[in-house]
Length: 318
Image (cartoon, rainbow, N blue to C red):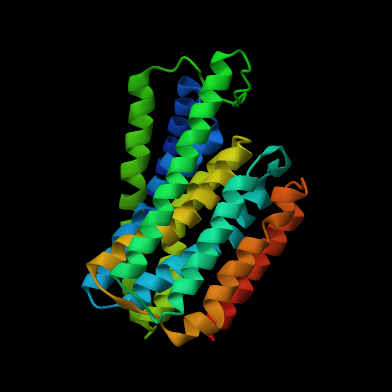
């Protein structure tokens, strides 16, 4: 049992280093392109940090373990808000009051409601997958349009690019590319090492696939988001942190399950409909004060969010 524990530790180290590289690359890319860091975090960063969920969900469907596939996404979205935003807030206050995330937040809520509605069909098949991927296309189209409008405003002299701490607007393209590649490769690699070996450890204690998906796998695949958000918080980049979580949650619901639905049908466990989906939606609603009321994500909020997630884990494991 020593080897799985050592590989779990190695995976965690890789995740932390890759998260730092991805934040550096994404923020400097936004400065060079004249695109808000929020837009970059909603696309490049969110897609990169969600890569482990995509790989695990596809493998779970191929291995005839839909409980892991759906539990991975539902549990990961809950962890993204309560844990991924809670823990960084314990380390440093995130100035979320300075972030304009209303449009993207409403898109995330809409994606969550759409996902729950499709779940009540009883299974995620290719029809549900087509609906989810269509919604993803619309979301990406809106993000692209907003980026184009921002660049046009900058060309007209209304330059409001973020003053990013530690960023270099003149960083060479090759260095930005290296940061992005290291982050996008390192995050799924680290997550795969961590989740694979943590699952081996968990199965020795007789934990079911569904519970593993909702807890161990969900937390493990959320570690890229956690690593990226911690680094963004320490660099005082609340827009990257919040955009990463919102974008990752939308990508999890729309892209991961959308793609996995074409690999094979995924029956929905009735327990998801009774409890876990509503916890996911409730956690999303908790972000409303930070989005609409101009509140900062302080250490007190970090304690509350982390405690709520630990309570959720206790209920699931019981």
